[in-house]
Image 1 (cartoon, rainbow, N blue to C red):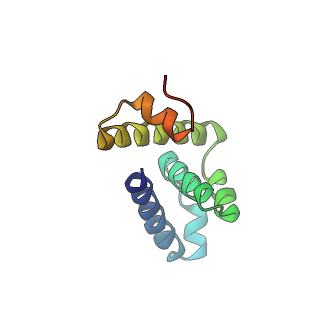
Image 2: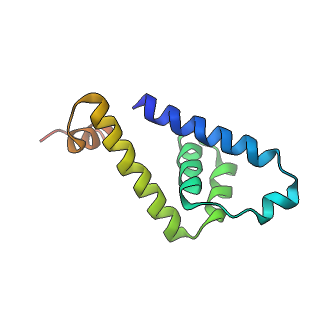
Length: 101
C-alpha cells in the first residue's frame, strides 16, 4: 500500500513542480486530464492540503473527478492485491478497516 501511494505522491509532486515552473498565464490556459486531477486530489486529501484540494476540484467537472478518483481507487486496490498476494476484496476491506468475511 505504501508503495502504491508513494508512487502517486511522486507523480503528483512532479506534476506540481512542472505546473509551478510555468508562467502564471500558461497555468490558467492548461487543460488538465481527469486522471491528473484525481491523482492530485487524492494526494492532497492524504496530505490534508486544502489549497491543493480546492485547486484540483477546479480542473475538471465534479463528475469527471469522481470517475477519476474511483478509477484510481480500483487500480490501487488491484495493484496492492497483487503485491500482497490477496484478493482485491480482502484488500479493500482491510483498507477500510472492515472485517474479512
